[in-house]
Amino acid sequence: MSIQTVSFTRSSGGNLNLFVDDTMKVKTKIDVNMETGISIYENGEIKRITNGGDVLGERKAFVTPDELHDLLAQVAAADGNAKDLTKSDIISFAQSKKGGDIKDIQHDKENGIVTIITKSDKVLEFDYETATEKQTRLENEEKAEIRQDRQADINERFFQTYGENHYEQPVVSEDGWVTFTVKDDRTYEEVLGDFFLTESSFPKKRAEYKKGDKIVIHYNDVKLADQSTLGQRIWNFILAHWD
Image (cartoon, rainbow, N blue to C red; front, side, top):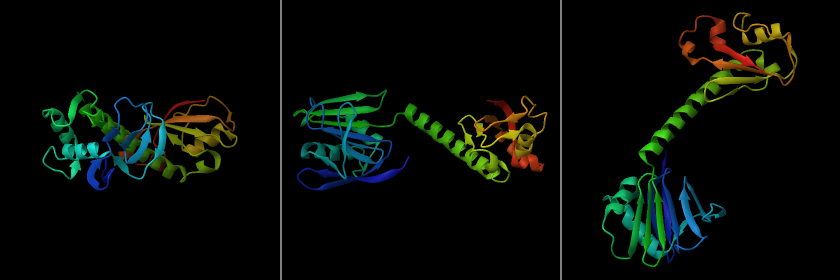
């Protein structure tokens, strides 16, 4: 998650600069019954989309009608800090009494969506990150980081061997499987040498591997802490299967 400044532009002039994190979504619609013409800020992008999600075009600024622009400023100030737009702002505003130009406030707590409908049927919608969504995001970020670290480690090891001459760049899956695609014909004995394997760790099932064959090995990060031999230092793999 990152926090950035977003400039919300008032239709008749003037800007509202707010700090907004990239998990936040803000939508506007000038008529609750319209099928098109929604402006949206999401993950650092500002664009116009249809209700079906089709992008009408990227925009350089998030332009809001005066009425919704002023309402947005009220929401941003709901927690006492008018300089940022947060989950606290949105929930606080949703819990406040309806009044003034507001006809209805709908709060979908399960999905973290607050929809504000004005008396003129303009819509201002916020989608904040729920606790469940945050947990999922953090888990995915951790998995991605682990995968990137494993891929970097595999790449480094790969080029310390003869592997780059005979195999495509290896790919590491999220659960630790590493796939090598053979670039040219290799005998079983040559494969053992390429990966510093032994017959016990890689039993012989075929005499040679042809171009396009895949060797799939499991990356064992547990053994990385105990690196006592050259073979272990270069390849800590447990053979799984091959195609």
